[in-house]
Image 1 (cartoon, rainbow, N blue to C red):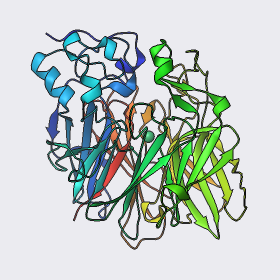
Image 2: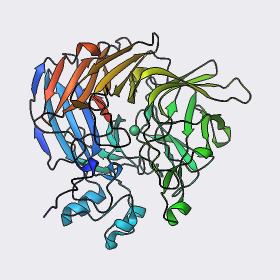
Image 3: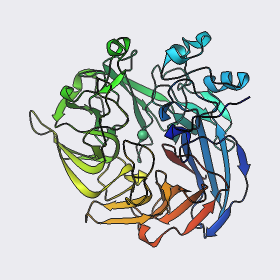
Image 4: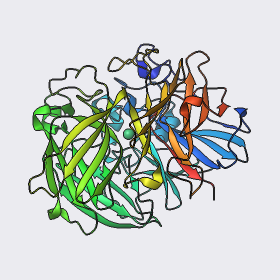
Amino acid sequence: MAQPMSATNPFLNFPYGPIQMECDAKDLIVEGEIPADLSGSLYRVGPNQRFTPRGDYHLFMGDGMVHAFHIKDGKVDYNNRWVRTAKWKLENREARTLINPMNPFECDPQYSDFVFTDKDGTANTATVWHGGRLLIMEEGHPPYELDPDTLESIGSWNFRGKLGTAMTAHPKVDPETGEMVFFAYMATGPFSEDVMVHKVDRDGILTESIHVPTPYSAMVHDFVVTENYIIIPIMPITGSLERAMEGGPPFAWEPEKGVHIGVLPRHGGKTEDIRWVEMDLSFAFHFMNGFDKDGVVTVDACQFETPPLFPTADGESTGQSHPYLSRWTIDLNDANPRATFARIDEFESEFPQCDPRYSGREYRHGWYTSPDGELQGTVSENDNVFNVVGHFDHETGAVDRYSCGQAMTSEAIFVPASGDAAEGEGYLLSVVTSFETRTSSLYIFDALNLAAGPQAKVHLSHCVPAGFHGGWRPNA
Ligand SMILES: [Fe+2]
């Protein structure tokens, strides 16, 4: 019999706590009108712990669940499924948790070596539709493939045997060629000092893997791909087996190691072509976009002074830290360039997005989620609940915002109105969870007029727990 989850761990309680069911809901109730030209599926991915966890529960270790809103002809169907990872299947059979993916010492003794050999991971972070496959990523393992309509689990996907590493949760797809570029950190073993960069063509064939030694062993969550460069930011959340063996945190914030930004030529660049550019101390989980022009690389990051959710090497909290949009500049015409950054927005922001047709290109429009400060939550590192969707205009510096009030917004996904629509012309989709009804709704905004409020709200009768990332698959 399933046991109650902790009542005190914020990540096991609303709005993060798991739901205990899978369903197919047809023709959801729509308030307002679904735009006639919006046709496709929005996926949301997040942790949704199946059974009472073993040991300390961290949000990053929950079993992955995918939620899908299938939009066509003004109607919306919904389904949700856990990803049937190896961990999920074993535990489902025994109706209890056997594995703590972040601590082998807290696994059932019979499964103490599971985390060292597992190929599926938790599939709880992000998704990409590429090469005719719906892939679910969690950066410590290869991706996992689902059926895009039924969400039925297909299995771990290693690009026909060619992928020998994990895959970041933030691959980049070139809008012109369809090429997908991604990487894995600590690529050749636990806490190794390197990354592996991979390229996959538009048909899903892995064409090239480039090994890049790094200045130290670092957790690297996201990166940037421009027309001519692959930018690998090494920021000092370090990994250390030695520290872990001595009872310290395996991953920790070590500011003295400094920021080193790897710049690899995108076309023909090999291991020996990487250039390392230093920058003042900072941290970012996510990048809005980046581009290069005349040898100058520009990167937009949701930047922290110190990262939340990771301890110092002594195991202490880094304290509260809030992210703001910041623009990095790297002038590669300089023989010894140093990267600089400058904050460009007054509002706190995370989960940045751009129009995917401008990924890696000069661009004007970006979107993010943000708090209005009126709704406080239970997470000590940042108790501002993110309840705002925002648009940042890089040309004018103007910000367009809409607050959803007593509710939490998910990462807002931009969908172009059509293939040839102007940049930014389209819709912004966010799954919004009401703190009053404890149910979730899909909000659909005009992406260039957020302040007008959603033009449609699509209601579920249950909650989509706060998750990480989403993605869009257009209908054929
Ligand atoms: Fe992420």
